[in-house]
Amino acid sequence: MSLVVFQIGEYRPSEDTFTLTPDTLLESVSSQCPGSCTECRYLDRPSSRDQVSLDGDFIIGSLLNVHSGRMGSNDPYQCGSLDPSTVQLVEALKFAIELVNDERAPVSLNNIRLGALVLDACDSGVRAANLVSNIHSGFCDGEEMGMEGDSMRSKVVAWLSQGSDVNTAADAVLSRLDLSRFVLEGEGSGMNDGRGFQLRTGSERTIAAVIAFLKHNNWNNIQLVSDMDSPLLGKFTTMAQEQDVCILQHHEGHAGGSYAGLITRMIDTPSQVVVSLLSLNELGNLLEARQSAGSGAQALFFISVQGHIDNPVTMSAAFARTVMIGLNSSAIAEFDEYLAAERPSSKNPWFDDFYQATWQCNLQNNYDFGAECGDVATNAVTAAPGYQQNPRIGHVINSVFSLAQSLDTLLKRYCGSDYDGICGQFPMTSELRSQLKDAIKSASFRDLAGNMFRFDQEGFFDRGVSFYAYNDEGEPQEVSLFVLIL
Image (tube, rainbow, N blue to C red; front, top):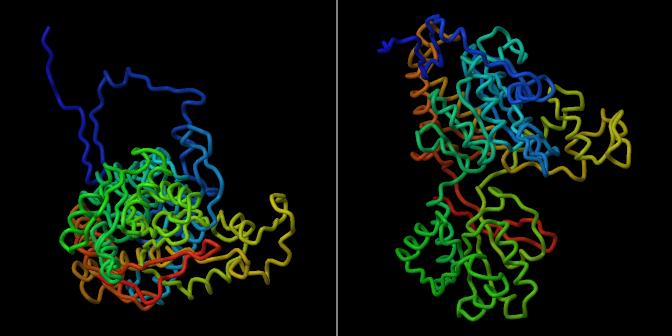
């Protein structure tokens, strides 16, 4: 028996459309799944309880880890405890959208409104991929998501994501759609196709900053500790050699033996300056070993290439005599003013829990804390003793501003410099999405902190690097008068 091959369908990834010719073979196939196996579809389907929807002509989607993953569970659909600092990022997105739409931002759009869709990824790549797929497949329509019409997927022109697992999973879906992505923290594979924009400095700039710090202090002889497979190792050793920084001893991380033994070998090396390429968790274990060792170990001075802002951890007293780097960022006073006016039962479904966690008090029908919240009308969340502005607030705001400016650039190109709304020549095709990426790369403006904002040609945040030391309480203090602008 011979078979004849004939086409029955076609998928066009740039438009995310599928055409199929009816065929009796396909009609005879069943894919039913009763009971629990449908959870992969429905547990990741956003609802009003776990998303923020702000309708607009163009929408920036966001995958933020409002909750952690469920500890001790292998179920990617379960969420754990609330991260109050991430709720601030949700509010920052709302704040930035409001500024653009009310023409109070350093960038503007003419008779066009920006919108946002914020989804809780719960630090799960599987959950993030399903959330994004549900949006762009049309499984979740606009009306279901609290927006007008059913064409929401055509309105989403860019995404903001947080966390390496979430970034990588989202990239696998979004790269096929040619959509630009802003990576708030963690790694992102989207850098490979030119549509990923990292809100942090690139590794070469980070290493250059550390070497400049060494040269500034005349520390030309150092020790280096890293894992042998560290992606930063080759870059650091090459740049150190170019700048005449001598690596007296290169130590392998924990794989080379105990942390105590590692500290002993460091004591026996002449230079007291140790540059670490280790993760902050591994460095913390090494510093604990230093703290437990003799007086000679206390003289060791560590400089970590892994920044405290990019990889936040709880700092203990062991981090004394340690310097770390972080993205040069400034507190946004206007955001605190905005947040001070927000109250529980706002349009943010996570705000009530954020308010309670920050004030350590109970709203009505909650019993997690030992005290009642009192008069919420007069007690702003920013007045709580536990409130501190998330250092990434400005980064979220600038993502929205750079998207708005880039859309404005394309609208002027296709609809005229005096455009008034979206013209007929502006369908968001694959070509336009590619041009939007180029426009984002060229975006430049003075942000709310008064700093120039732009991305470099590799898609990294083009901003200086700050160096931080830690006081006895584990709080970061910027190293005096040393902010490196590269």
